[in-house]
Length: 231
Image: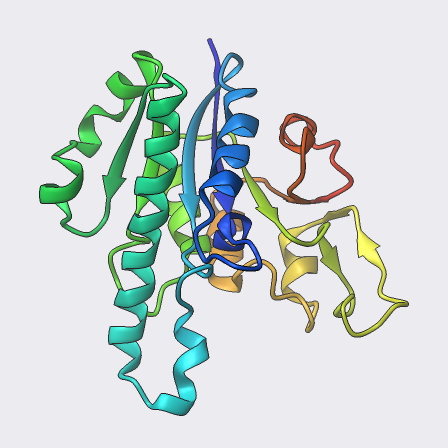
């Protein structure tokens, strides 16, 4: 029986220098995911930061709840793009949204998740948790618990967890393995939302953080992508 996992992706993986949602980048992401499909049942959660980040509007004084809803809607845009690529590649997938976008994506029942997985579909979770002030990291943990995933893989633009911000401090040291308590005590650790980390710790759910790249996802699924394992 295939193992089941949640893949948490940064929305930035869909962005190019010129375009917020680059379909060539999206296709490259889809092709990497397909390589895992034979051995794993896959649920996907991603952010919408390639399109909109609520934290970037502080100078406009936009209502923060509204900003979060805009961000959650951005995850649906990414979900539709990824599903469209899967369709072109003849790979079965389905979007399940925490917000009501049924006119756009149709109606899917969360209680039928096992049936969808059994039919070979990749499940794309959109809309975050459906609530403002909650990150997509937390959404990933919640969905992982819903589907009884064995672990979460978080693909980002950095290689893992560091003791300092590696973009500012060249001497920053990467951790290869951490307990959740160790992670929560690192002041500079922001790559994984600490609410999500606390929830994952409570439910004994491992999270592996790695730098996205060609052929790295298959390595990450074995915790061998030079990333950081938190458990």
